[in-house]
Image 1 (cartoon, rainbow, N blue to C red):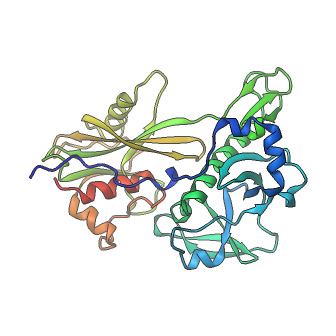
Image 2: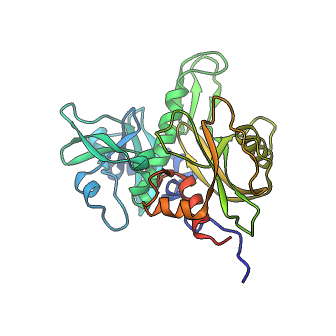
Image 3: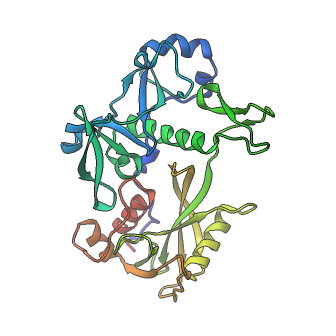
Length: 333
């Protein structure tokens, strides 16, 4: 029986969402204001952390951890100027409002990204967790809400002044646009495309080895697939070819699309691809950018996912790289 090319097989953690974010919902002020008293608010602090029930962090409930949203009226009779509409779910409107943990919050250790313990503020039976490290633990609705909230928070933080004249910007369309107070220039949330590619050798359909690399700033033994931003005037496939050549010195072919995931750190969308390269192709890591690159056999990746390979630390559950590598590891050559 011939193997089929591997597919993702699962939705990346930050691509999950149930909320209706139709543009017509946020361009109807009368509707939004009339529903504000019954709306719920996602609070996010300047580090991208949002509160969840503390008990749920320690005992993961079926379906995932819910965000600890607030009643909208606790922020006033109308949405504050810093609020942004996130969408509607089950006849409830959801908004983002910047906030912060209580001043008396204590720092606690919880399991975080890459299997490393992280500190998080905790108060009033809640823990403030961040999307990159804990997004995969959230339920589908909460994952979508916090991903959108973090994307908007980052955009507004970096877009406080006009790119044309330097004037201060003011929010419009309930957080989905800004307008310069000096020249009137309008701006809308931006997303920067980046490719991430799983390269395997050309033995069989899905190969026997995968190309993994590590950056110098990563924790010891941490490896992942290669990624990079799409440049101006460049196709996605062209970006895949260039990035793999630049970072590992390898020529790839048979490039195919796998799936995508928003990555609002600060405003990317990761476009996942797979590609093939010659078996045993010599690797030449980019000086200063890639500390090490290597061909890793499938069984070594499988063992890492089972927790039986202490020499290989794979991407955390919140990243599309995790889904890509798990799908490849499960496939047959």
